[in-house]
Image (tube, rainbow, N blue to C red):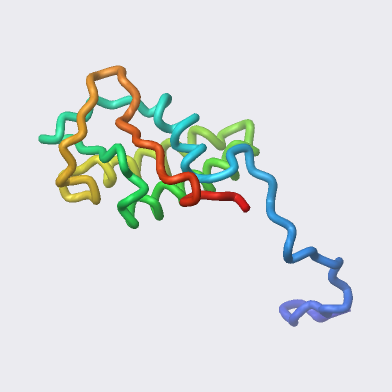
Length: 132
C-alpha cells in the first residue's frame, strides 16, 4: 500500500480499455444541435443585435463551443438532480451569449429567425461529423 500523498502503485489499477468510446445520447455535435439545442434554445435572431449562422459548422470557434456544450450536456444529463440547471447556467447561457453576440463568430451573418422559431440551420456535409 502506498503512503498518503505518494503515487499509487500502477500494478493495483484495473485494466482500462483506452480504445473504448464513452456512450453518448447524441452521436455528434450536429445531431446535438439539430435535435436538442436548436429546437429548445429559441431566440429571435435579427442580424442587428442577435446573430446566428445557419452554417455554424463553417466557423471554428462555433464548432469548438458547440462541441464543448454537447460534451458537457452529455455529462450533465447523468445528474438527475441539478445537472440540467447547472448546465444551462454555466454552459448554455454562457456560450450561447457569446455565439449570438455582435462580437461573436456570427457577427457578420445575415441569417434571421422570428421569435419562437428554431435557430437558422443548414445541414453540414455528411462527412464533416461522421462517426466512422
